[in-house]
Image (cartoon, rainbow, N blue to C red; front, side, top):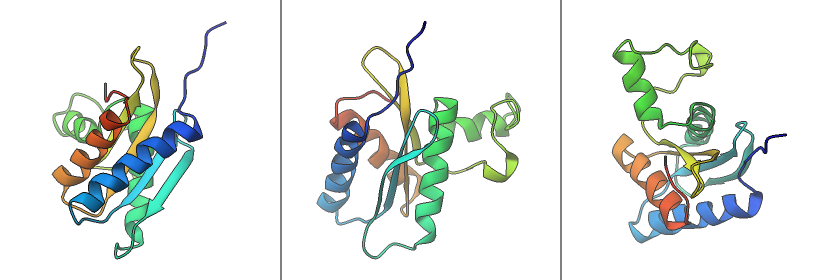
Length: 142
């Protein structure tokens, strides 16, 4: 039998701590959601001063990154270029996130473990926080 790889709650908390530290060091605030491989939320933080709706967007970003194994930016770009459809990727068009800020989390052996979503900043900032939190915690983005 094959093995299923997924983030543990301890690993998610490590990534979360890195994301919060990055945001605080830059005087920024955001909602952050980390999911396991099947898209189930295992860590969530809504920092002070952010729009509560951003928590929902962060969750959708994390889920999409975990389900597709790629950044939400890449998924959006592939769909816009006509290379793929949301349906082909297994994403309901109602749940498709067209914004950057969702990143997959991989281990050192390239096993997909889950996803992170960051929301409240510009798309580039959201994505940068997600990417840096993953790598600072010792994981890969793919």
